Length: 608
Image 1 (tube, rainbow, N blue to C red):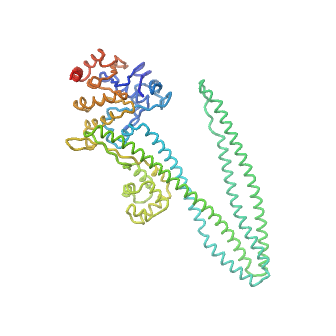
Image 2: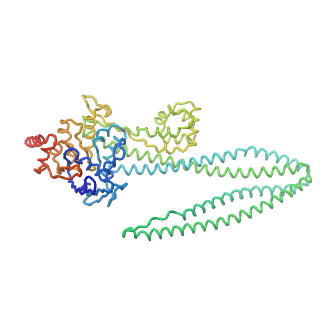
Image 3: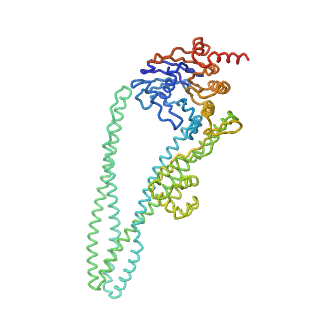
């Protein structure tokens, strides 16, 4: 892809119509004529953003140039097709005829600082990989699915704990039932005459216990259906879509209206179906309630008959009936517990599958990054050496864990670094879910009571933010300085720019736009290394630079030199052409640093 043309409406560059070529394009001119502004307008129009996290949204510069009513229109060419891109000062994103890959843009400050932070170095390597965004997109999708599943898991565990608390009295009730049954048997031995009434009473109480379970479950189903009908009804009150007026878009009005109508018909049908079902459930519920009243009456009658024979037997039988009903209800809860246990196991495994898929994608991305860095080391050795460590940047993982533990009352500060170093997200989920206190204690090297408190807290929390935290590969750049490789953080500004530009110019995959790459560089590096890299890159990919140094357009053999000028109120193109064009040659000799010397060096170079 190449940038063919930039047009500007309104603002400092009102009516600008600037064409670019496929090779090396250099913006030149005195200070204050708008070279940086052209670069920022291209960045803004194509939504290129910043590779370094140290920079906020840089669109402010472009908007100030465009003013409130301005617009940039950019023509791209990709595989013989023209792509039109437009963005006004008020637009949040550009409008385009088809998707495109934005160029890589560097301001002077970005070149100085891109290597100083881990994210910037990683983004610089990622800019070499055309398909990396697909992998990142899949990781984000998996993380969203993981976060949703973790929320379900936490809710299910909470419901399970509540159900288990409710079933705690079950063992005591069963023991009480056995004791009452023994008393009942003793009463029966005392008076055989009550056996028939006793048998009928047992049957009635057993039937009543089953009936109570069904009534309780039907009550749950009623509430479920009512909530479902309410949710469906609320969907009928969805927001009205806006009217479309242009000829192309207005065709959608009827489609959207019909679609909305069909949706409402479907929802109304669903409401009707659920209302009918609810009506049937309520009929059965009422029928069973009436049966319960009848059975309660029959049970009282049988107990009265038994009490007339045996003193105290009625109280025992009444208590036994109540106990049986409670046991039946709690056993029904046990069935729910078993069902939820199965749900929990399924969702937990689903979460681990998501984490495994994310790990696999990250491993593939690491291999792509590693291949880029091997090529960089081959091309830039021995001056510059790059290093990569897989998933070694744990900063965001640690921050997410710290945020989750904040307010827990636990002393966790000194444990954060230990946990993130020794326990991966997948293992953290395993420990916090299974509550393997001993294994966790051994893994992080803390007493088991401390590990127990920590896991118990994490078990009750939604730890999706921890499990989906960005764990990135760590990239390092080093420069050979006096026989010793130094990390980029130890280098001077000029040396950092040397490293950054050397890496940047190796990227053949995207249009590259740089503002004054020569700043902070010594003349020897510009003449011997930078110019050669620019020449090589321009042969395979479009490069757009702004510069004050004549060596860059002249020795770089620029195919398009744009001389910008300004009258103080408005910027404009004074002239443009190749370095062979006399007007361009005169401008370079007149206003650029080393103008005549640059042409002389070029002449000497070719004569040799």
